[in-house]
Length: 370
Image 1 (cartoon, rainbow, N blue to C red):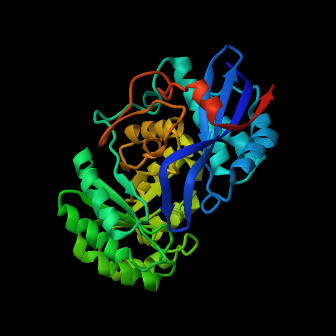
Image 2: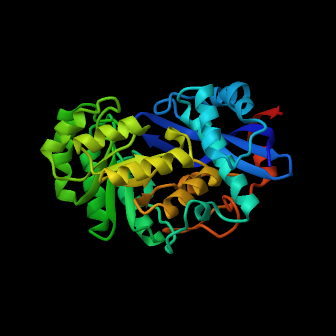
């Protein structure tokens, strides 16, 4: 089985409502869908959802990287030789985690389809429980968030993830309003997405959050201020999570050494797919840090890949891959029954891609062949 052809499709996904975080507001979400074909007729799907604030990549940049460098480097290879695939990818381009993730995910999809096994089985087997998700909440007015929290409880969610770091100074009022609306019925976790910038501000904000029984605080300071987490850690016993600050093994080694966080948020788009994230999850386990698999608002394709990884690794304790729920239309069919996500025993990703919907969302398309 050899990779013989690839189709790269840039799409634009309509959101049910804008997604607002500390550094940007998204009215829609661009994505790059990769279809890898083999000489024996199998098709595997991958996906890239870059974010210039995190990976330094853009959608059009991903298309160019795949077309000119990454896919030519792996044409003719067996997609099941995943270590060799990554060696070729890394030799072709440094970084480019989101672009490489598309290739990695498509190769795992092909490997599963060839073996007639789901990806989690190829990774060592799955835990019996279905993965769960939290209700992710944009930076909105406190009263709006309170209403959304009550609705989330009615829908069956058990946890809320509140995006904070807004420039309006209302972060504490947002959490206060939500906790007052739902009591202690649901867990609340908060993510500043670097929005509090410096350790001094982060310490002040975290102390103000302590009365509201917050599960953890994610990425309170700038991603490149890794040492700053030590200063935040000294000021609070609340659980801390690093996200944008953890991309590769060197980043993770720093946090393991410093013991400045309790958890890390791994994302396939940051680090290059299932393969490197599985290694990072094991590294975190050896270093005593728990892992969450986070989202860049991917479709069912990459979201499913993240769930397969989470099901197969004992150190992954949380998943937040809720992208498909935010889209008005998307090409995949991953099934959510709140708060659970149904990952099946179908081969590969277990996701069927609707080519008509994909065509409807298409902005541009490229092909690469052997």
